[in-house]
Amino acid sequence: MKTLLQVLLLLIAGVLLACCTALVVGGAPRGGHDTAARSGAETSLDAAITSSINSRFVHDSEVDALAIRVTTWQGVVTLQGSVRSQATAARAVELARSTPNVRQVVSRLTVRP
Image (cartoon, rainbow, N blue to C red; front, side, top):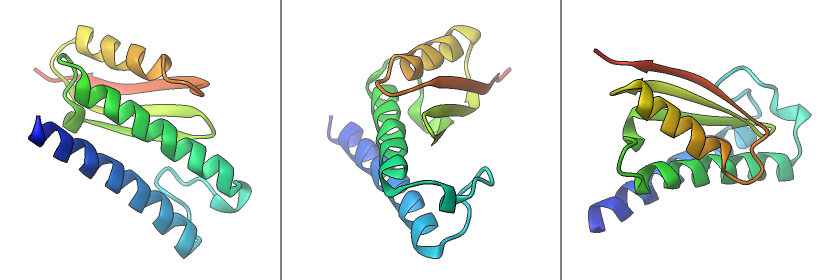
């Protein structure tokens, strides 16, 4: 349980650091989106969505949270990474879709051999 909590805290810290860096530097975050077009509230909401999804992945026995990268832009969530099976990919998409404030989920997940 302690390890799970540490992983969750690292995921949250990483998301917050990535968002804050983009705001402080003033550059575009990964994905090429222009941060100038977003308010602080939008950025915070996207970070909260990403954090919530990462937390759901950590607590789910089927999904490997460390194998999936989650990004959010204006409520649109993109999942990238490799998963064990199509069922795992579907589970990850379902967990993301059922997260509050998610408008759409784009899956770029691949099933590893």
